[in-house]
Length: 251
Image (cartoon, rainbow, N blue to C red):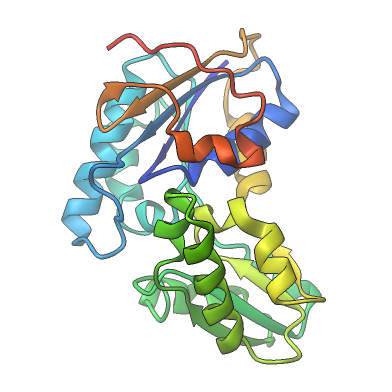
């Protein structure tokens, strides 16, 4: 099987690693847009256009399924992606894990980008899946960019700022941006005792349920802003990149 993953940047590593843990033989195509990130501040039409461009670049490599490994793109681009590719190519979006967090905890924080925090999309998820829990939306300005650049000082500063906005007594933190799943150790240390809820494992499981169960070769192809490339150096600093031995994509 061959599964593509689309994101603005290296946040897709979390879902790629989750797929690899379950199916070591899955072939992966990682398509991101480092020249256009962050997607959060962009218009809805621009996000959809950029996500479609990444998806088309990945789909050109003969995919069996495509994961939209980006919360912003899942909010703004899923209808366009599904119209363009389904039913021939299954599309799996990323949704913040509000439902399982609120099912197990009474006090929950959702860490997300400023553009997602307070959005009608996130408020709708809270209304549908909040289960009566006390839920606090916490904006995390600069955290995704800091993770993208593996800037440890900026990561620590952004995490500390978000932790300061997180009420005491919160027992669960929902990671509402895929980039944040790459720094769970730092977030966990900043909010001691809170259980962290990411989306990567659930997204990977859903994708594997929807694609044909055929053997692959365990290859990884990387496409950065439409061009074949190795993984960015910053990506290699995160443990989720381990085992993603990259083979050059054919443009």
